[in-house]
Image (cartoon, rainbow, N blue to C red):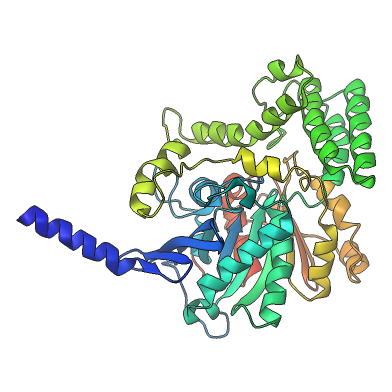
Length: 461
């Protein structure tokens, strides 16, 4: 009888926390510090989200507590998994508290975007998004479902913060959100868009790889000539609108760079990555592509092991085990994966397209835009980011470029941690000693940066 009572209690608790709002499934933790659910953004296309409410919240009428929407890259990488447990969420992959969680400065909203990523799923393969704009439309539908029902959330400014390819999603989403707010379809305050090591202009990044590595003695003159030759072909293909061909050459260029540099790590150029000798011996485009996609997850795995030698902390085991069990609403036939190859392949025609014009549109509309870059990232090198910034047509660009940088420090440390430049609604942060994953490489100065971007009233470090 006691077991039966316990089972009934759990069932009632489950039913009390599970809501079906038309096209949504929504749950809360018992203490209401977490919310999560699915939104059917289109018929048979389901997007998963997870919101953490900060225990560090400070109530300040003149400086509202912010919410950060984190968008992962890939495309097809899981924000609910990678951004949350690997980078900025409350717990790490060993389910231990993270001292540098961004919850110290804001509430955190993670999504698995686009559909087909992580826990998000489609019932028909035809429903995968094929453009960044389609992804933005789905995300806007998600935000409408989450924010329009909750007046408390509507009082907090939303900051869209992205990493890597997520930056392209962020700028298209920023414009979509701005329009939805104007049309009164979406009830939220758009605080700004922040682009972390973001793939905004692939052309500028691939053109930067060879010269940067040559200056650092990682490749020689022969390697520079070979890489520049391919990079210029990519530039020509982009000018001719051959975007799929450009994506294929991008992965080939990565392979050449790896060969000429003795396997430099694309996410931290001070490190080596594993050997790509199998790919180098077979000139197959598809094999080049597979190697390029695996570099992302392989680097995260090796990074985790460096910080926790002898540990496991396997993200896939975590998300398909304890976390899936906790969430309770993930369909049995949905297996979490860190990088969806299917999502990447469907977006292959978008992958190399630039989104500089969208950044210009956001700036022209008065939206706050922040760009931050890790000093030792290669895939989205600072050299490339500075190049696309100079292509902006924004009226304040000349003044912005002419301003001196301000050095950044962290707490009582004397060493320079970065530099900062700002003019009107454009900010740029140079984060020293950081690679592609800035929050994990330089957590202290990054937290200070987040507080500045969001105007967080929090004072805790």
